[in-house]
Every structure is written in structure tokens, then in C-alpha cells.
Image (cartoon, rainbow, N blue to C red):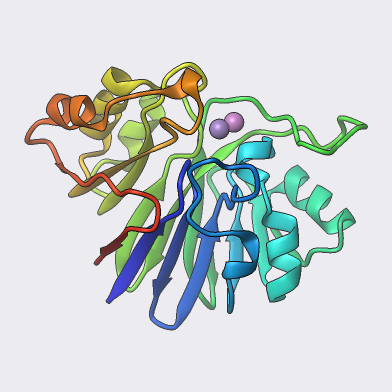
Length: 226
Ligand code: NI
Ligand code: MN
């Protein structure tokens, strides 16, 4: 048994098989977060999709407080290392078997700036992740446009975490097309309503997805078990 707990925006905690990860821990300053950075404990890893403040978030502090490994695209990992984190750098298309699970880094089309990097030297490609825990394959799409690359994941994903908030990422219609590309069993919306500019209706998303996948909308603090 494993579980996926939503903490608002794009932050999810994943637990299973004795492993405990967090993805994109934007908690401080997140008006929808149900926990703060001090409420997370016993983490093995912090996975970061990109360096924007609403994803990097509290990642550096949480990783250090938990002696957890930061997993991130190479340049972002380097940045976190300069801040005192232990890191495991990866890049798009690469996979690695960690003690806590299997992680594959996949394409996301988005901006690559790193919050707090005044030199600009750590700007890099953002990513998504396919994390396999307890034989369940969870795809966190990160911040991304709809892209044909998602078709490469068809049949390889059980649970898809998909941004629906528009403006910075896919909106509802494109997110539903992304679900059609990937064909997961379950799709969970993220990256909506945190700020006015990304207001969206998950019911419209579920209607657009139709029978392609089961849409499960989590409120911050709610958990999906697999
Ligand atoms: Ni972003
Ligand atoms: Mn974002």
C-alpha cells in the first residue's frame, strides 16, 4: 500500500514500502497549504521539478532538516548543493533506482529560472517525474504545456498529477488532452486556485476527461491510497 497526500499547488507527499518523498514543497507563502515545512518529517528525498519559487519552495530547508536527498535537474541540483543540501542530479530522459524507489525524469515545457540564483548560472530545463513506489507508477507532470512527448508515457503511468490552472501551464482543455495522451487509471488535478490568475474548475476538467481516466480531486490535506 502506498499513498499520495496533496498539500496544495503542486506539492505531494508520497509514501509506500517504507519510503517517504515530497515533490515540489511550496508550503511557506502558499495560501492553500495545509501544513508548514516543520510538519514534514522522516523524508528520504525531495524531488524538484524546477526552480520557480512555487516549486523549489521550502525544498532546501526541508531537505536539510530531514537529511533528505534533493533530486533535481542537474543545474538546479548544483544550486541546492551550494546551499548545503545533499543532492542527486539527473536529467531529462534518465532514470535511477534509488533505495526509496525508481525515478525517471521526463520532459516538461516551461521556464527554467531558479529562484534565489542571482547569477543566472543555474537556469535549466524543468522536468516531470515518473516515480514507481510499491509498483504504482506516479507521473508528476510539473509545470508544463501540453506536449506530444506525453504520448511516450502511454501505458506507463497509473496515477497522473496534472496542472489545470492555465496561464503558466496547461488549462483544463489541454490537461484533458494530456490525460488522453497518457491514459493513466487515475488523474489528479494540481496547480490551480492557489492564485487568482490560475483559478480553474476541476469539475470541468473531470467532464473533459470523461471516461478516459478516473479524476480524483484532492483538497489540501487529503490523501489518495494505492
Ligand atoms: Ni513554474
Ligand atoms: Mn508553478
